[in-house]
Image (cartoon, rainbow, N blue to C red; front, top):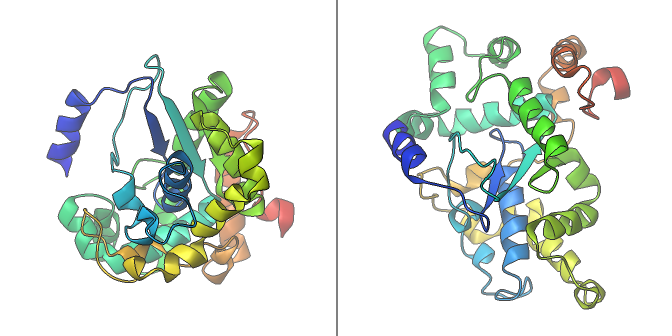
Length: 274
């Protein structure tokens, strides 16, 4: 994996037509890929079509991987869409993913080492990994640094960088899909909206729909991860099944201090809602 990343960095150049999707693991990447693919290709593949690619291929096989790459997109004219998630839910989701796919992650040389090293050190509980996360030890670096960099770029270059929140997308999927389509340069027409095309794409790409498809119950992606591993709960607030309120408040405080003055906030903060 590391050799492939190094080679890609020297050979891949972004161009104006390109649209890149970015996120830390388990922030809504699979869902965003499905929504973007279905929206961009709706003229070729109707969302109601029984042969739609998303009904027969995992979203990660429909939209290629450039994972863990530092791509220089500024000045290229390409567009970048970034999705973030409440760090508490993201950590819980990634923890569960790593437990299921630890062997594959280690084999391809990415996030599994985080879990593997933790286990080697005797850190086999969620609470132990939570400590690592609070220290900023996470694949890709500290969560708050990654999110903040993309947030700043979205403020500086709104026509080139679209910043999305997973929770907002769940709360208003139709509205956010329209925003997504407009950003990608393929806004929905009045006729499409009246015909219910937006809602059809939302339904096709919903967690329940994708999770229930045979292709996502069986088989593996091109990187050997089991398709089913990408679909768990997708809920807001699942962290409450893993963290105490004190743990949640501690992590919220770390993130809030790191992002203070930026204008970036997270709706799931325990100091705000719980």
